[in-house]
Length: 100
Image 1 (cartoon, rainbow, N blue to C red):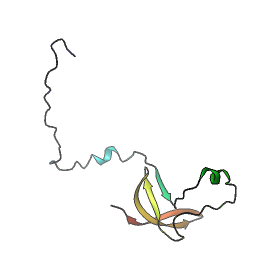
Image 2 (cartoon, rainbow, N blue to C red):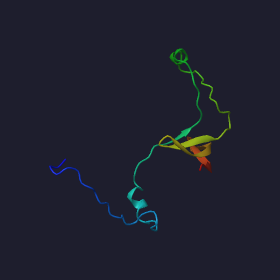
Image 3 (cartoon, helix red, strand yellow):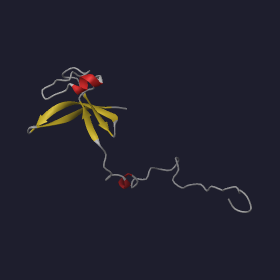
Image 4 (tube, helix red, strand yellow):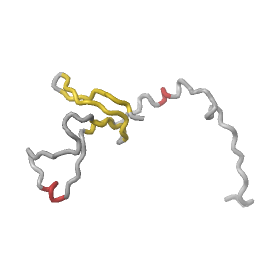
């Protein structure tokens, strides 16, 4: 705080506000930002005692049924759904629905 006490601050109008046309180059600033993308097959809840009993070969039953779509998440937020596909020995997800 200055020796003269607090003073009012004047804010100036920022160009390119919500009424301005979108900047086509604006998205270029973030195009190379890395995001975590994951496909979630399903979830389940178990007690600690059940988790401690897990071993190789244990099967965890999930809340989804076989053939149900998997959720596609970006930074832990669901953005799409899809179906599991196999491509040259690797698994992938074919997008079937974009979420709003």
